Amino acid sequence: MNPMLCALAPLFLIAACSSPTKDEAIEVRDAWARATAPGQPSGAIYATLVNHGAADDALIGAAAPSAAMAMIHTSSLVDGVARMRMVDRLAIPAGATIALAPGGTHVMLDGLGAPLVAGEQTSITLRFATAGAKQVPVAIVAPGAR
Ligand SMILES: [Cu+2]
Image (cartoon, rainbow, N blue to C red; front, side, top):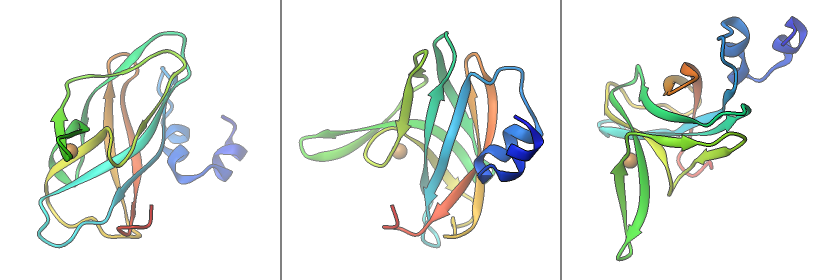
């Protein structure tokens, strides 16, 4: 990406501009989280994962400075009740776009050190089997904003 494009790029691309990694097949777009209430121990981060490459990859872990633990969770409805399950690995096939979204797969934050405040930004590091670790900014939005 040329410097002019970097200057105009949305916030989520700046990390990629300033520290290019050798494998750019995986793009993490639009990472966001809902604000949390004071004392709330957990939160969730959502994003869109795009595999521009010709080879399959997988999300295999996450870490966040805001929380003691960050886990990959899937959600499903069991007898009308939403259940979350931790997964070790989320496949991102070649060419695929995988959405982490409310009601579905998300990165669960547990042991939040401080509330996530709407309008502020946090970050997350996502670890991919092939692409390695990618740190991206996470926009914090008010509950109900999206
Ligand atoms: Cu969860």
